[in-house]
Length: 406
Figure 1 (tube, rainbow, N blue to C red):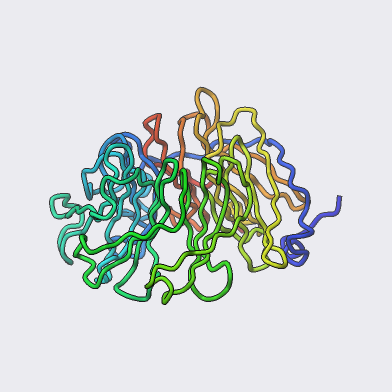
Figure 2: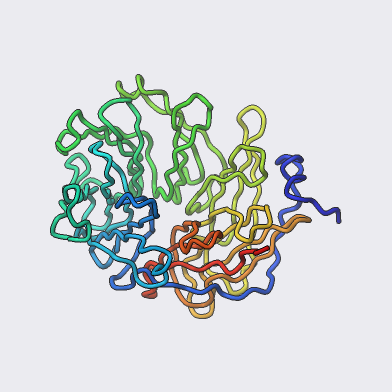
């Protein structure tokens, strides 16, 4: 079989990429480090620089534990021990938590979305500049009245949509006929009663929200995955522009792929080096669907079916070069990884085409979640950050052992 370098792969383009077979291969679990395992039901980890020190801080909601917590990166020397943490709010049923600067003061706050019986979106505001970020008594939590009690809210994304009043919020709910829409910021963002909600599309169970300019017109469109119902799949909504948003005009919908399938977390990544990102998603039972843009706005769908032996069910996928060979690899997380089943594996891209499926997390853990790939220990390679919701592992990261040194 002809061997292809990373440069050759980029030159060939998406239409001539090598075959997409996946083969199980030897591999040892990576070392696991605990950031926090003191509560119950850690449900997704998002990134931001909360204290302005240039290092990645984290936020997550503990769904069963009833708290939303932020974590300050302690520096490379202490990164393998539990991180300094603060409970920014005591709210039940937290499904998503993100960093955002809604009031425009240059400092990040936390926004959380809750499902279950709580059904609210909360704004958690930090203490005044110079005060102790790790003092939970100094944080203030307020619900947005426009969303309170209406739906189980699953995902939230800050996005400026009308060129007025600071960032707005895209929010998405769960359940037949639940809305995906946007919460419009008022002239005074602190006046939470003045935020107004506009639905964009009915959905059933939105798993992912990503901003990306699909049509090249300079404004952010919306990639989302809908997990259930008659309109399940991957789609993008076309942003009609700030002026149209100020009068609440509709966003045209475009289907991408994996239609009718149970699509979990999605991502955007340039897999073939052509400068254009592909859309990829973890899809039940154990597939990765990759969508490549072609001429005329069409998308070509490719499916990687992972080796089922010893593996849980699909939850999330992320793409990056993990071993420093110049080719983009994949990380795949799972739920239902009970017993000896593995909950996180990585797929090594082979130069001649196809992928090696290798161990990453080992057998510990049952229900893993969203993945983040970043250099947490400062050694020059990408580690894997995630959380585990059902087996008590909590917020964790896996140390990359693959770094190639001269």
